[in-house]
Length: 173
Image (cartoon, rainbow, N blue to C red; front, top):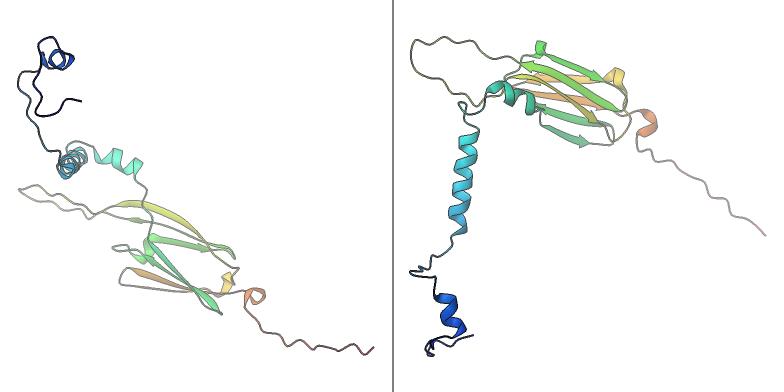
């Protein structure tokens, strides 16, 4: 390594390495700038003009978000279904899983001028949610309000946490 106060001697290795370099500017690397550039490029890639919506519909799978809460008596399942009519939802329940499918239909609007750009997702969806314990699928209660489907799935009798008193006999011996 050459020290900063040393001079380059004619014919030295250091001078040979610098022969092809005329002006060399040091630029500070900013990783955030690279990330911003990447984000702009990705946004541009997914703009409606660049990627037809039919391609997006085939590649993106829509599934409703879910929350599961288990109590001693039942499993409570909440599903997010915004903008979907109850008549467009098919719900099937087995003793081990919940199957939901449906369709969010697009609204048909005609406008005289201007461009409409929508980020809403329309189309069919389906999801199978495995349950942590067996349930009584004949006693399921469902309530749909404000885009949230609430299911109460009572546990099967064998699955409920029962406390049983056990008698202990002492051996006399």
